[in-house]
Length: 295
Ligand code: ADP
Image (cartoon, rainbow, N blue to C red; front, side, top):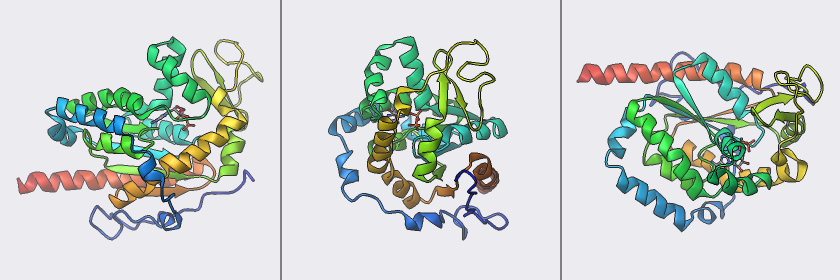
């Protein structure tokens, strides 16, 4: 099963920039359907209020949207390789600052902050942390990034339509990578994942095993399984993804910024992601140059 390979869906000929034939085209997406009632069910009034409060308290929000160099978003099922693909992107494209809500939340849990205590019960059960908590946590980061023109790689946010709409008020999402991995591979992969809780170091017995079984390479301490990586929790996370996060595929596809990458192995998928991203960033630079020339 692990020997299946990526289905390359991206066969982009020479440079096809936004507005060209390839703009926003996503072959695999034509197979997607989204649950009909999901979008309304996740629009919480509370998070809308928070969003309005943020928008009005940020006088520079529309101008700051233009200031961020690029905002890249990575979407995909839990355990679907978002973290692995993100770290490869960061090493090849160091201009991006990584914003991983999962890492940030786990850091809060480790250090016992109030936010961490609040979030832990949701995370352990495989549920999403409420929108208002997430929006507050992430928007402070994205607002300061847009003020300084920093490029961002968002990993794990947004995960609901409310979160996506709140983000639209502070940033322009330039490109979205949608990772499409079969569920059976995800379940296999997650049960293989063990961590060193104090540092957050992640091991996989198939891809990145520790030198000694069950032991952290650097400290010699015991590895454990994340509470939310236990089977019942994994199933709930996959269900939550379908209900709350899948509609974002349509949301960003409709904006013409989404590209789906389908496969089972992150190393193989990344070859296509890298090629696509190089192309997109080069196109964005061309567009900037054109704008400058037009004055
Ligand atoms: P995964 O993608 O494998 O679920 P993450 O590390 O991205 O792992 O997230 C771990 C957990 O943190 C999620 O299951 C969820 O409980 C919480 N979480 C992370 N990002 C968000 C978000 N944007 N909205 C709500 N909950 C979130």
